[in-house]
Length: 381
Image (cartoon, rainbow, N blue to C red; front, side, top):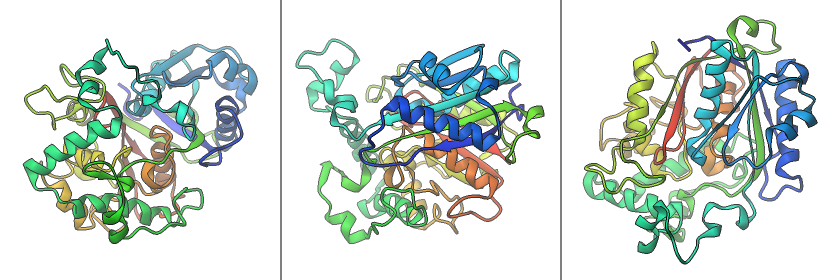
């Protein structure tokens, strides 16, 4: 069993920016070296690598350039924003089982360039799974999420003022984070409500940042963790999830389109975990779009169905709330790296190093993208 057999002992981050001069390859190497230095581990000890299928730099380029030795495990996790927890979980399973001893997970992204965005290559003729949504005008991920959000508003009475609280909460956390791209830009309810629509009902501030940067993590078996430079953060539980008949970014054709793959993931995650939803100190929910936080609150059992809007409106995701969420500013206000910053923020909080440190944080739930095949982790100090 995976439970507590592996630990995150190092984290590394590059600068975050709208347009960094370095290549994705250079950024990846910088983040990995920083994570190894943070753990006090020489690159030659690394024998396992895990990343996203969207990662453009081959593993052999990374291993050679950082100075790694022989590798025993290589893995990639699919579905972009759904991949982060999977990439970490795959590596943890390999290390816990003895296939490998010490590994690195990374994500490097230059999202600031319009050519790097998923929908940049949309064609006039479509033969793959996108044929069920793009002919109806759903060309971008935000368009697909907007349809689900409107359905949620219709069924549960969510208001734009309630939805706004997600973005406002992330921006409030970001003000304490000097690396957050939006940390110096306060956001008011009036600004939110006056912002231009990107895909109704989602406005500018409901959308993640377009940004560049890289993040890496170092994992070891728990019995090795005591030899590392930092306090270990244990991977207590991991699951991936994909709902039956799910498509990549949509589930419009099922009996309940709002019951996403996160519900499948959550059921299996809590089955394995001694730490339950009521025991979670903080959460880092994937937030490429603000409604995904609401969907995740319900899928992982933090509140009941249809209750997430009022939950955030009551301040329950703020520093003094029932469950502080995305305490570095998340993808909406810190940086968008397909959710890897959510994992590193979880580690920082459990180490006691958070810039908006949540008192008594001992457990953290981290999730990947609600609307795709996805994954989740339970971390503990």
